[in-house]
Length: 106
Image 1 (cartoon, helix red, strand yellow):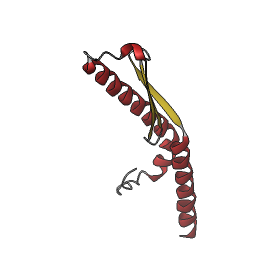
Image 2 (cartoon, rainbow, N blue to C red):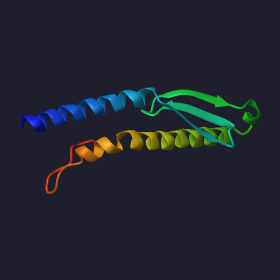
Image 3 (cartoon, rainbow, N blue to C red):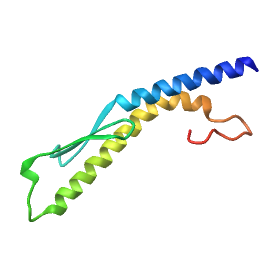
Image 4 (tube, rainbow, N blue to C red):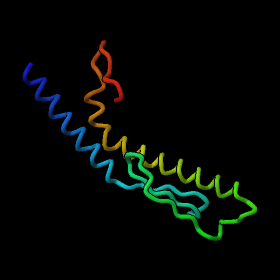
């Protein structure tokens, strides 16, 4: 029983370390061949948005809005990839056991 608790504690420490790394790792997403670039952490915190001035057209705000949404989605996809790489080995170890439930949120 002690070995199981020690293993669980070690996995929890690894998980906390991976989460801290994700909070610091920056990823970016872009749309319109780089006309709009969003930078965020792999944990999902938006850190910046860069918009090329040549895309700003007051008579066509919808295009700019679409590009911002596209860049946000691309950044979120890139963050999800980094999360999967960082958490994958840990999630596999917490994914439940045969006939038993998996841990929530994993």
